Image (cartoon, rainbow, N blue to C red):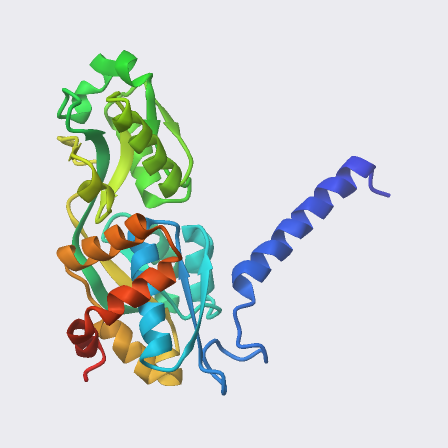
Length: 297
């Protein structure tokens, strides 16, 4: 017989597995078939709680629903379960894959079970970011200014490639700092609060992101190249999507945003504060020529 404490732990583990399965594993069309097949024409898109991913995924969803007559199911999760679900064929696509560095480990693990549909955004970057009024310009200067930053770097979700890069930076530069975990929204909330008080703060960050339009920020120089060079954001789909839904795959292959376009969309979502899908739908309707190009119309 199990002790009560052991049974309690086992029950917790089983419940966690069941919840994860419901969130991403059970993404079929209701009849046990591959996502997107059948009469309901459902497309399943997953995204991580990152500003550019929210913007791009909701825009794609609006187009699929309004212009292509598909039903779209959106699921937000951490990067690991998203990659697992796409590679397992339970989710149709993930539009926010940073390469060649940030998501390299995920592609090494799952890449053979997914299809790269090309680049959606070029020249993305990662780094440590401070308000422009902070009087340092390089990661190498952080230790000498530990006291003004409280010895803390405000991070995002722990599964993000950016956090792994930040941990590497702490090690490579010998930083006597603690990396705080959270999420994209908690990071920007802390950044905004510090800027309102004209206080120093250092956060993990990336571009494209609406925060660069809202505030005057700078990316700290990275002489050791820990955060790598600029990256491209790719769209990855499950195997079989091109055969099951060639129209959807063709659209996703064409789907690409410039810095100004994505920045404008992210800014609208942040400023309007409503449902991202509603904001994305309005943005889509005001950019008919761009959307028509993606649809080859």
